[in-house]
Image (cartoon, rainbow, N blue to C red):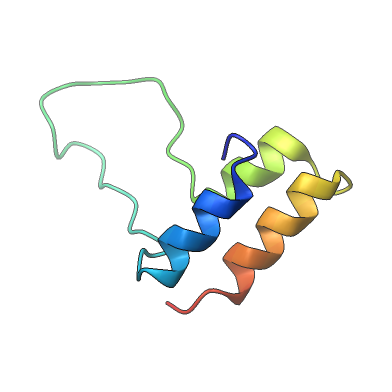
Length: 66
């Protein structure tokens, strides 16, 4: 997500999921105020819908197989 689009391609081509399951709340004894985001949600927050990086990353994630 740090504008390393080539690394994202390698991970997706290697079988990494673009849609990992979100952890259930209360699974860990630790608490956090961090919002659990999917990769596509994180991309939208970081890059918006108009930047070249955001568009390319969103397309890669959207076109990835489940």
